[in-house]
Image (cartoon, rainbow, N blue to C red; front, side, top):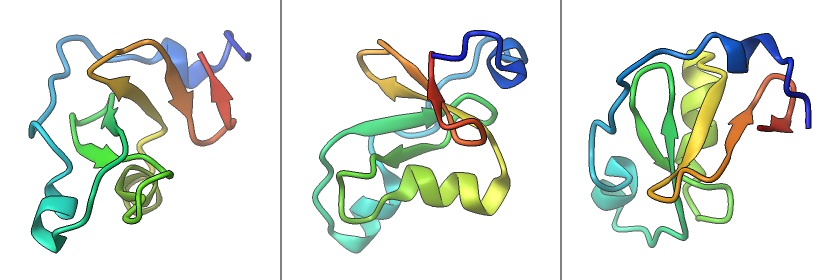
Length: 85
């Protein structure tokens, strides 16, 4: 676990989820395994175990590096360093 990752240190305060569920999965009528929230903008996407992999697609489209598991909030992930925090 790389706790000195500069991306984990550059967290924004008061980021809240933009939606309750993965909006793209709902539009595409896809099942969701688990949810992830972008800590840059609050985008909610499904995890890589879900068919859509929308959290990862959000990173690929925006470059926003950090997301966290929701609603548990037990860990964060840096896409750039591929490390948990």
